[in-house]
Image (cartoon, rainbow, N blue to C red; front, side):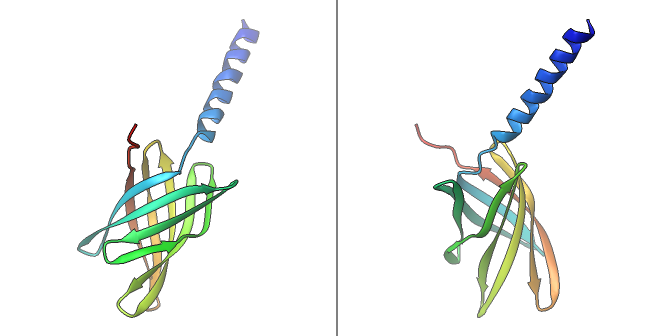
Length: 129
């Protein structure tokens, strides 16, 4: 009985570990966030470039910018993107957790010597079949 229980437990743990490996960041994500009282949106696009990830981020008032240091580890996507705001360039660092076709996490940037963080949520666009 103990052997059967041990085998079942081992398969269960292995099954959960396998599920974590199936996190897929590749696709187009519609992001929503709020800074102060202003609701904002952006589009995150992640693709495979050989065995690495690459991507871009775009905002309604700014064309695409290349993502820097894009990494996926244990279901968490991290990267930075340069946001142009008025005549300034601000590097925003993102840490987002993937859960199926949803992302959630935060962005952080230095605004005039003050670090500001904001929550961000995203939904993956469905592929047309």
